[in-house]
Length: 164
Image (cartoon, rainbow, N blue to C red):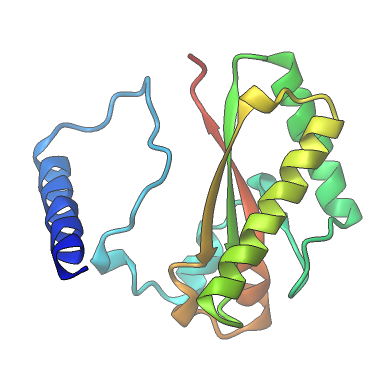
């Protein structure tokens, strides 16, 4: 187990070093998941709130994976965009607030992604256009103390990737 952790740490460090030395990523590919550098991990609550794009975030109530009317309306808009361009793909990234255990947060975030994916499929989006990513607790959850910030952490982000 210790060797696995050391190996993963080394791979992570090597990956970070390679990223710093390489040029900016080509516009033809977007990363599936990005890891924030340690310096950004301690953002203020205002910065965390400002980083959430409401047009690409399906928000959920605490301890819930149910879609409200605002979420359904937003999903319809994204479904139309995806159906108009069948080659377009999205990554559905699930998050949760910092309430509860890590295991609970991961399970709830995964359930939220499942609900969003199912609704998009019901609206006519092809399964092959969607990929899943579950982050669980928001990386900056320690910065969030207000209800507004916590509410924004309970979301599924719709991340568009370039079509192939």
